[in-house]
Length: 122
Image 1 (cartoon, rainbow, N blue to C red):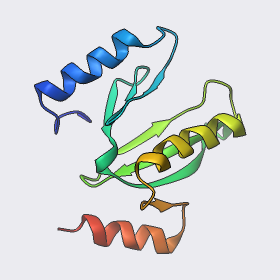
Image 2 (cartoon, helix red, strand yellow; image 1 turned 180 degrees about the vertical axis):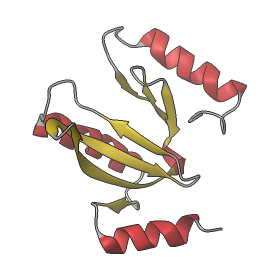
Image 3 (tube, rainbow, N blue to C red; image 1 turned 180 degrees about the horizontal axis):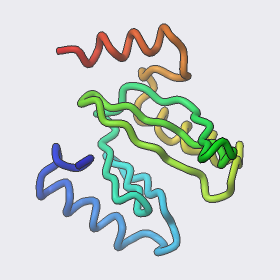
């Protein structure tokens, strides 16, 4: 579902990135894409509009933090650090994205939510 907006060339580039990366590496940061092996997701940096930290729970039990990514086509992705709640890894994920997209919305606020909605309305 998440990858339906991408074509053969993009899938080929993602496959090449996965072949080149360490097999234990779940998140692969390429020149144009992020590949999340664990979730089978492919995200183009150019599509990212908003990132923020998310605390996850299941049945009321805290599971950890991750980075939430919202794209221009209103898809939502979650990128988790290898080590639960590793602030260093969470910061690294955000920094890698911000290197490619310094102009995106950062943080979960009502203002960012409204801005994201206005950016994706068309």
